[in-house]
Length: 400
Ligand code: NI
View 1: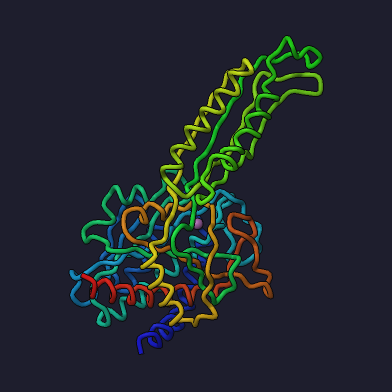
View 2: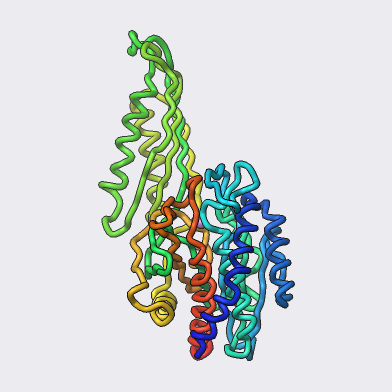
């Protein structure tokens, strides 16, 4: 039976995939600089007999694996390949050799799992109809997002991708489990930059100055009403101001206050409207206090919505592969993810691979200097992706 074959192949390849992951983890590269990573992925594929490889968005790769009737349909599988500017604190023998750069978001795991799936799918080419397009994507961690660049370069065309599946590690979920959510899943994430310009002076004579600190305080509290009073309760929204610099003293009112924050939500119309409200509120509060203000909102990734049908089918594949007891239903997760760009173009699903192992002390969150995974996850991550791909292709083919 197919599932059995896939599990055998995943176990057979496991050591090689772990070795690849460690090599990639030792040699992390920042967003859009993944030159060696790209070579490493290409070499691995070529040395395993996979040669239909094209470069895309400079440091990305697009790989085709063709089954029977390759023109019948195409499914996309995506892994991101870039690392973060974090100094790794783990003391493993595969920890980062590139000081200040670290695979702290598991993109080494995503890449290795997709390579593992590639080996399995290449071995089983006679067992499915259609074409698999494997997308090794650069620059997930940095605007404008590698996904948007690859889409501009036509990654979803020639052959046209019918649906798309992406996988991401999740340190809150036990190793051996997978998490799914249909509908709204991850947020749009925009950056807010505000500079309040007042008139500094002696703190004993506030009437002779324009105090940007009290203006900033009003702005911070008022902006919260955009979430609590103006957002539709059915559309989750988050507004956080995480940086406030008012560099005065006990007896000095500063000239300016600089603030930075983030606005996240799950609806493109509301997102536009909220941007306008933020800008207007900030300007009018400053004006009412006689201060000047500069406000800039830098747009990040759109929100990520998991297509209900693709998600149901992929979740069902997971139930078949690991049993219902190992399938977790996810909550909304207001982080940003550039997989959202694909999900806005084609029906897509983005699911989570459990990597947590408390008994081994593997519990650190994403984007922390102690993040690591239980590498057992690579066996499931490779095998399941192959199984989910073949299941989805079967559906797409019958549907077309
Ligand atoms: Ni990530």
